[in-house]
Length: 338
Image (cartoon, rainbow, N blue to C red; front, side, top):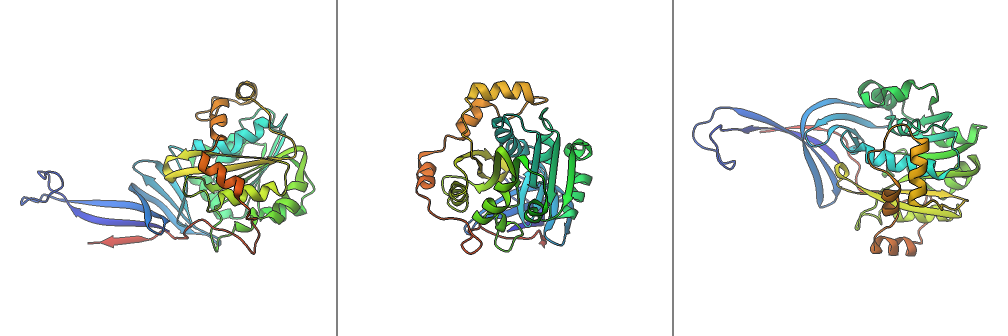
């Protein structure tokens, strides 16, 4: 659940250690964003301003200017990305799959309406076409208007934006792709995306639309020492039922207050060393990555003992009837407190 709360706090210019003294000289308005991560755990940070709130047919949307993380995009009460650290998430999502592919030319993005995933893909010199398929046109239009960092990506002639359900678009389309990327909202109960994490979807909609040697990668939710059992471990196990080779990896994202996970899958093995990844980064990617290089990926794909043990022992297969969800479903609210 995500909430915005504002309160008028009495401020004393001569106050010491926050204590109120007798000579009051003003008021300070304090605004905070709060998200419930677990039943007994909340994460909050201070706001400079609320830039926009609204609702589309599918989701609640907010853009906040936060003090610690810059602009932050909130959908259905869950932080999706923040200005200061979104590069960790998007470099981790995009570059491992494209670099492990021998020569990726065509890429399909499921979701990705904010444009950051397309931005990172379009840095690859081999890429000729990117299809971004997002169900929510209002989110796409909102991000085009408000996220300056992705404006170049949205006008790149290699990018085609399609407003549709990703499953429908993959099933009716005739084209196959070298890489398919799942940049979907988290599987939240009642949300629009959980059906796109199922075995049947991977088996019947995704895999048939990969070219020979193709690679699929998806964001897979929280992957922390305690949180990885929510959905990360079962998404990984589900992909093992469909593809021969599966690599799970993770990275800490400060604005998420947790480690985050991704899972990459293919019917060809992932054999590149850290040095080979670095060589491909140098040859293929325009500009310099801020986060990901060969050693970083080697570290990211070396999970802790506890998480490895959970993934090895996971038996749950994600289906529509046995879906797992990450905690919470919220909407942005404004509360005035005395």
